[in-house]
Length: 271
Ligand SMILES: Nc1ncnc2c1ncn2[C@@H]1O[C@H](COP(=O)(O)OP(=O)(O)OP(=O)(O)O)[C@@H](O)[C@H]1O
Ligand SMILES: [Mg+2]
Image (cartoon, rainbow, N blue to C red; front, side, top):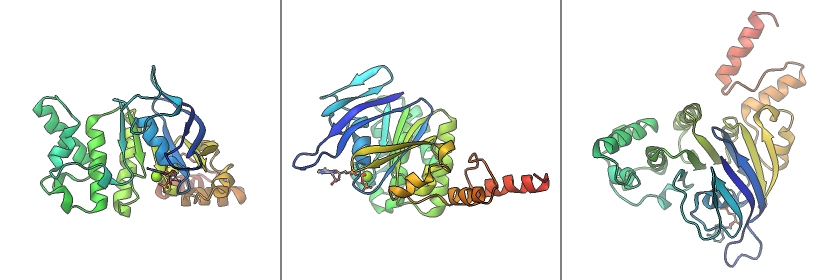
């Protein structure tokens, strides 16, 4: 469990606080989408939870440990930065991924490198220099790096913004699989489709949490997403349009294809 309590944060030199009195809890196995417009403070929350930024006011509890001012990185939290260029240290992919694996046995390290590269669809690039990869490919490598550590908690800061649409779909499948495997994930995002993967969506506006929406409430509360400038996922737009026409479909469907299968079943069974 991650419990964020009354977190406020100001960057040095900024006249206004970046975050004000942020509180929320993430249960084990939950996927949370943290959305909001540029500059609303999403990445700052991620950095504070992971311990990359030092806490100023409020606390972060991870399982039974309460972190406060002065504490550093949290061992069981993996974070994937918004910009992979800020995360990559080495030029060889093996060095980059094994860096955080510490004193694991070499065959275990090899296994983890192979598995994590496969998970993000980058195994065939293993021997290429990191500097020669595209930004999207680098983004996949830093994701592989976080996965290789197998932390209980993952914070993904806009994990697919630089990844092409085919690659995005792969990462979405991966996030769904990670959830099935029991990972607890905070997905910071500006992309409508990523909201659909989350059990709950938190909307951040000017450093404050202004709404917490369960997945099952997304259709009813879609006006809140719109109010704070969040684009609605196409699937949600379809469901809202259907509901306006008296046809109710559950939001258990993650993709348009799954939705169509559901509609097909309803039509064939005449209900
Ligand atoms: N290192 C920094 N020094 C000073 N101010 C910062 C720093 N990083 C972020 N800020 C400020 O804090 C505010 C929130 O930034 P943050 O990066 O957390 O927002 P965000 O919601 O992640 O935005 P984006 O969608 O653009 O990634 C912004 O006004 C930004 O200017
Ligand atoms: Mg950000």
